Amino acid sequence: MSLSVAPLVISLIIANRIRRYVKMNKLPLWEKPLKYILFFSVFLFVTEVTLSAIEITKWIWHIYLIALIIFSLQQKDFLVLRMFIVAFVPYEFVALFEDLAQVINADFYNTNEVYFNTATSLTYIWLIAILFSQNRQFKAAEKERIKRQQEDELNRAIAIRKVELEVLVAERTAELTEQKEELEHALNELRTTQTQLIQSEKMASLGELTAGIAHEIQNPLNFVNNFSEVNAELIEEMKQEIDKGNMEEVKALADDIALNEQKITQHGKRADAIVKGMLQHSRTSSGIKEPTNINTLADEYLRLAYHGLRAKDKSFNATMKTDFDETIGMINIIQQDIGRVILNLITNAFYAVTEKKQQQPAGYEPTVSVFTKKTETNVLITVKDNGNGIPKAAMDKIFQPFFTTKPSGQGTGLGLSMSYEIITNAHGGELKVESNEGVGAEFTIILPV
Image (cartoon, rainbow, N blue to C red):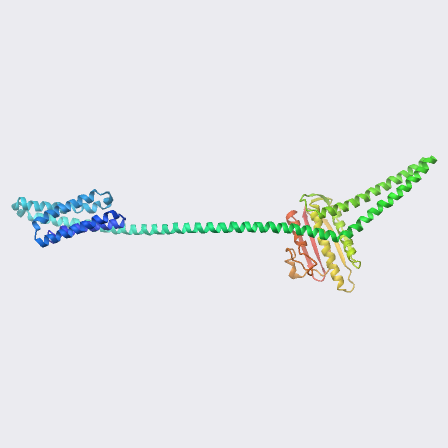
């Protein structure tokens, strides 16, 4: 390789490596100057070859290479390439010293030409070794750059996707919020409707029980009227005995009057209890638990339901059996709610036995039984009938709202579902059902105490 070719190759190598570095690190400011450097290197070489002006251009090459090396080393953007650029310093130093020796002292150069050639060869070897090492480092750096670029692209893609997902999440959240508000509104409407239905159901059942109430309240009122009339007669007799001065008879009459007054008070309270019970049944539940005699409550609703059905259908008749555990005493319950449940179960039982009676099975006697029992932890209230029982297909759905086994128009399908909710949610108890088709059904209320 001639002397004029070596500077060209070196300048091209330096400029090309810097150019690749600039592109790799995205430094567009240097792209234009590097094009000028490459253009000048080629122009200088062509001029040298065309004009055969090696003696002149070789000094221009020295100045140009030294300026290029110094300029590159001074740039902060090229600090990573410092070792690469420094690798060309020994070659340029030896080449410059060799050309100066030829001009200043040709004899000295001729005498030591071998040494100059050896030094030049060593600079080539050094340059090749550095370039090889730098090339490996450059490839490693290029791989690292590509890796970083891929990571950056991945991170950008993740960031973009994150923004897209955030937008989607925001939109979906807005949709869900709107749906939630709509569902809450629908739920509030359903609760309002359910409350209205419950109240309507209560009032409807109260209407059905009107005759039963009239029958039940008539008995204590008859007692009150009768004993009041008797007392009026006894008072007249007492006045007569007082006039006669018969104080012993007066005292006996006074005792009879006092006894009758006790009976009047007893039956008056009985009538008052019936009226209060019906008023409580018609009102919206207070949700407050209070001590209640569950036996009395069950007995009253059993007789009221029976007489209410008798008033509607004079041909209706059924045997009523009771077995009340007197050890239960008073228990804390929401009286109107539990009364509603008991009434619903008893009414259903009477409906079941009436339906079976209409089928006219031989020797059939409609019977509805109400039992109470106290265990260590619970109070059990059982309503049992000997009707047709509940079909197996309906057992799993018996407590579902609006499900009924009655013909259309004869039931809303809310009675058992509301009863189940009252027992389980409001009282923390259980409502169980056992049924044998053709034999009857048994509902058991389990209340914790």
